[in-house]
Image (cartoon, rainbow, N blue to C red):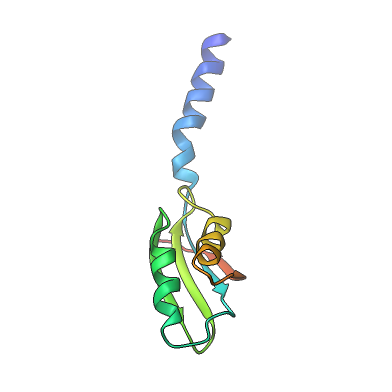
Length: 98
């Protein structure tokens, strides 16, 4: 009984990374007021561990970010933009298949 519990726990632990998936979210960043602002927002998001892609659109005042959800969270992304002086909120989210 004890061995089967240990084996089950171990298999669950090993399979956890398989549950992680790339995610793409769009953040609303209304504080971008000039054409140079997206440079700062993009740099802040790229510094977050697990981020694989960032596209910032000044005209729409948003940023689309693809990241590994096993390494970071939406909260970490919004905190990164806030720390850079550009508070953001989740605008849209979707899981991506790669």
